[in-house]
Amino acid sequence: MNLPNITLPQVSLPDLSGNKKFILLGVVAVVAVLLVGLMLSLTLFRKVAPVTLTFWGLWEDQGVYGDVVADYQKKNPNVTIRYSKMSPINYGDRLTTALGGDSAPDIFFIHNSWLPAYLPKLDPMPTTAYSPTEYKTVFYPTVSRDFIAGGKAYAVPLGIDNLAMYVNSDILTAAGVSVPTTWDGSEGFLAVAKKMTVRDTNGRIRTAGAAMGTASNVDHWQDILTLMMIQSGVDLNHDPGSQKAQDALSFYTTFATTEKIWDETLDNSTAAFAAGKVGMYFAPSWRFFDLKVMNPNLNFKVVPVPQLTGADTFNEASYWAAAVGAKSANKKMAWDFLKFASSKEELTKTYTAAAKTRAFGQPYPRVEMANLLANDPNVAPFINAAPTAKGWFLASFTSDGQTGINSQIGAYYKTAIDAMLRGADAKSALETVAKGVAQVLGTYSGK
Image (tube, rainbow, N blue to C red):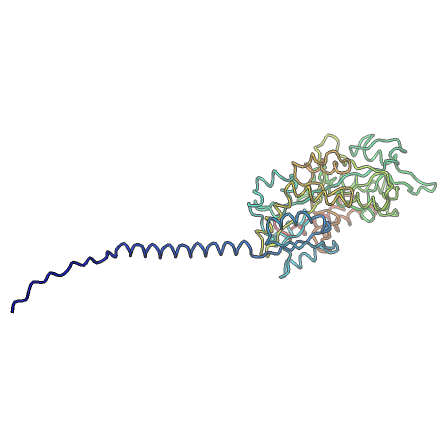
């Protein structure tokens, strides 16, 4: 049987290759969107993750840093800064204990002589805060000497301080003398101190020309002696018993021995100066506030410390700087805050806040800000001294505890001063000091 020829209709099947491409592109697009979304989510999570920084202050009330903290938290709403003013009593011991435990503060202050003792417990500053070059340029030279180790910086100063000389203007006028600018000479510190000294009929000191010569009742004797040693060119780390050191120690103690301008029967030097019984007194800037509280009517002025005739100018530095703990879980943010707090704008706010409750704030640590305080006669001597200031481990009122580096070094020098007051010579007195300094500094690295 012959079948008829049947012509089947032509059916055009769709070309699926284009759809496959479309589907593939769609899948890729969806995956890309998901990945971007995930990345954005992670980024947003990181940005909004709450961070709490614990900040141990030491001298300033919370209100002084209030604007700075508020400004930073406004820029970083996920950050909370908890500032606590610590008691200076045994501060060094408590800080050491805290840094060795699990409740260490993120930010805290250390004295400019403490770096060797605390170095293992500190986080080195990242270059995002200050590069080494910037650090050396922005702050006074003493800051780099005090807080750079192994090419890395470890603290940011929010103020600077050093010794100045406080002079009772009434006693100065009564003696008919001018403020001394040198230690020696007919118009030098010693000569002026002699003329300012007044004794009663029994030869006892009624008005001391200067508070200097002992260790028992002279506040800041450590800083005064360090100043004299530095000005004399003594290598305090390696040769504290040198002839130059002997001369400086002898000059210091002569005020209480042969010259009898000061003695151990007198009141504490700060109290005596506040009472108008001392002509010249050495202290850092913060003593200004104490004196004003103790005697608001005291007529005195602040002037630069004397210098050695014909020698380079040197001053003594003793100040605090903020560091970040090695155990901090928020190191990056802590350093970012310190960078912010040490900016010109924020330092100005801190100074202004402090000056609302006292005569002035902490002298600025930034070189570029020196001119802002140049016209304040009470602050200018400290700022003008900052470029040539140096510090050492013989420093007063550091609250480092009985076993702290300052207390140990100070104990050796106090023994030397006491020995000289009993008749010992400077050479023998400093022999024990030299051995003690070598032993103490030998326990720390980097010195």
